[in-house]
Length: 273
Image (cartoon, rainbow, N blue to C red; front, side, top):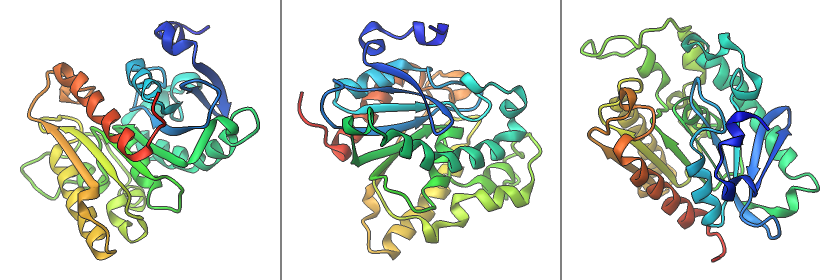
């Protein structure tokens, strides 16, 4: 057993299977491994791994929601130092986004598929994982909700800020590649769905204004398609004490996890336990 997995709480570890899904290292944690449960795909941030923050997954399975945690390219069980460098973020997002359909197909295989309800399937992630989520949502999909943390769908605004009051992000990026992947540039193919965004207003890595700008554009997209912009939920904290006000929510970590599981319970409707 790898050390990261060995540190899981026993109540989570006994409900978890380590797998490779469509070539992607993953684990699936299920509430009971007997009845079909709603399922949530989750992607961690840059330099992290799928085993990070097991309390999140424990909350989900206690709420009746199966957790599918994925290692981003170059991370966790597919470690590659070059892919963990900030300049590789766009490549990581593009690759991971293209792998998600294979992951879902693998989840539907015998031995797994009978325990998952794909009509109640969500997707989400933190930081780069959230950016991957938003990029994937600009393409056809079967997800019924999404949740992001410390993330943004305005890639160009993040790396090439128009406002001179905020310095460039600090790493060279290929602007053409950034724009090609930028969800805010492709909202015409973003199908409205319930979305929860959690963010610290003092985030030093993904500035809050980049998320605000993206959500403003996304709400316009919802209105234009006849959807309720209130489907987009935003919860923020002025400061949390987390590293760079980005990695987790510091002293508000419990509040953030509770807000997320409440949202997922409303949207994915697990059976009462």
